[in-house]
Image (cartoon, rainbow, N blue to C red; front, side, top):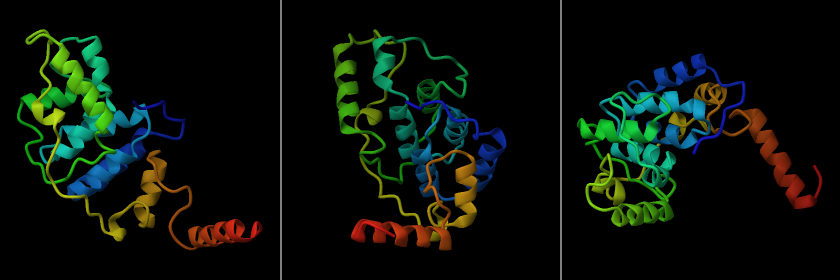
Length: 199
């Protein structure tokens, strides 16, 4: 579940991330959703889920970040037009209308933790057939297949100063110091401090 974002997150910064993602490989999309930390990132995540190129792995990540087991504890019919904050509903509604059929990227443990998958499976099995006002697709209960994400260093927000700046402004999870000389100096200082107990 996402926490509340501090004041520095704003709509303009998220719009800049959308511009970065338009035409970018799905590997960067998956990397981006993994960096989401706050509820205000739901706007960006919903936008990603609504794009026809959105890979299945990205949808699975969003699905499990929405705490799906909670939705089975208190099941409610899905809205026809989910809001940006209704990620669980958005994933299922979009799946029902044919989205996320491209599955090139692998769903990793950090996208769908095995404990969450197991818990969700138990809750689905425990429910009488037809008792839920929605259906959890079997593929979301067994998200297999795909290739590991491959993001070259120059396309990663960790290593590209241009991307780092945009991702930091949007409140996405990036290193606290921009790539370049300042980070190298900080890394050397940190190593010296750990090695010798001083700078």
